[in-house]
Length: 208
Ligand SMILES: [Zn+2]
Image 1 (cartoon, protein in one colour):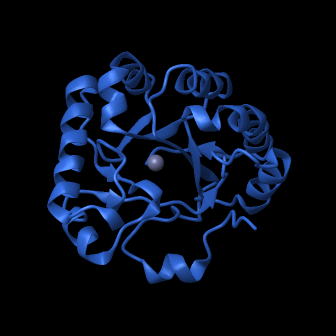
Image 2 (cartoon, rainbow, N blue to C red):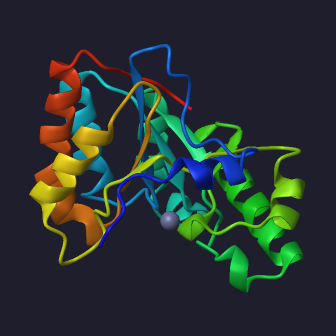
Image 3 (tube, rainbow, N blue to C red):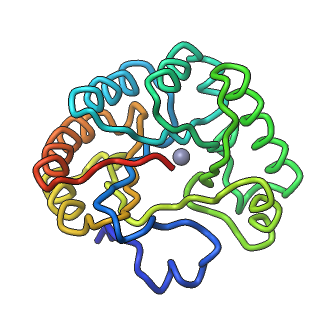
């Protein structure tokens, strides 16, 4: 059983994190984690261009180093860029100092390769505790998500996933996708239809 929407009780428990944006405006926040990855991030970029939509990419620093042209293209096209650590570390399995240094390495890499100073951070696996977050919140807005597409799951029923995220989308929703190889097939099945849906419902897309 997959939960596509993070329950309000969890969101309230961790109220210092961003789970969604304001409910006043008909704006949805698309986010893509783990890239940039050739042939996947490019696919996402083309699609966003077709729909004239913007997204925020939570990048892994190591992928930015390897694919700096792609990272730069994302920045040039006016999308948002956030920090997702340099080596996709799990906060639950990494000492604090190592974790913070890895985030700093990611920040520097993104700045060097794209000119963007990142102000948002998303912890890999959504794993973060209060102690670690106290340090991070001094410099970053910690952005989680309200809706998750589970696009990285191999056995995903993509039409069910699409139906769920369409159903739960509301003003201010932050929606999680991944621009990584594992997600490509599901992304191709879900994303064009989801963007169609957003467009037909009159949603704008915003930057984090
Ligand atoms: Zn990730």
